[in-house]
Image 1 (cartoon, rainbow over the protein chains, first blue to last red):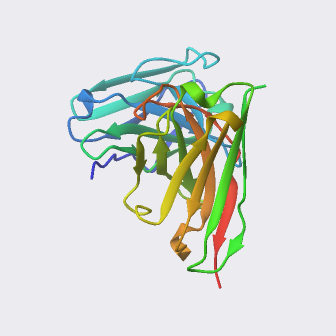
Image 2 (image 1 turned 30 degrees about the vertical axis):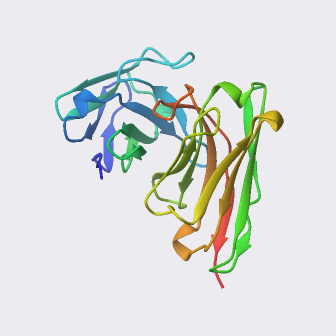
Amino acid sequence: SYVLTQPPSVSVAPGKTARITCGGSNIGSKRVHWYQQRPGQAPVLVMSSDTDRPSGIPERFSGSNSGNTATLTISRVEVGDEADYYCQVWDSSRDQQVFGGGTKVTVL
Amino acid sequence: EVQLVESGGDLVQPGRSLRLSCVASGFRIDDYAMHWVRQVPGKGLEWVSGISWHGGNLVYADSVKGRFTISRDNGNNSLYLQMNSLRGEDTALYYCAKDRELGLNDAFDIWGQGTMVTVSS
């Protein structure tokens, strides 16, 4: 089955840039979606199809996808960005959705 | 207000069955695929199952294939998950989620708050 690999944690100071990676075999050929999940809350879509930011998501959030790595970048990080972030793709070879293991972003 | 509300979660013994429901409000589910996603408390997200807009295409995670059945009632704006032969590893918070498109391969743009299923003797 298709595997998505995320770092368990990323730490960043307020005002700096956080980069969350999502690794997968030739992931650049797939559309990658990203979710933010704050403690005790349901996930929220923050980036779709690699680079599309849903309405209401700050411009500080951006995405890229190439080769074997997709990246969610959070610029000018705020305390409110502290959350778990998950990447997701559709595995067309098995007709299954796949989530990465998640990355906990800590704002120092 | 656009929302999804799950129900049906409970404490159930291993080997027993349970049916989860998800009712949508503020939009019609007719035009979208729908999914179930679960999360063990403190752990990551696991996609469970999805159903196309017309119900003709059903897909499942390997971990639940043959035991769980997804269905929908567009007339009642509802999604269901019939869970049979439940195991301890099925214990999780189950979310209902709306696909952005008719098919099954897009992002999930609306999520419910989840319903908890606990499988234990």
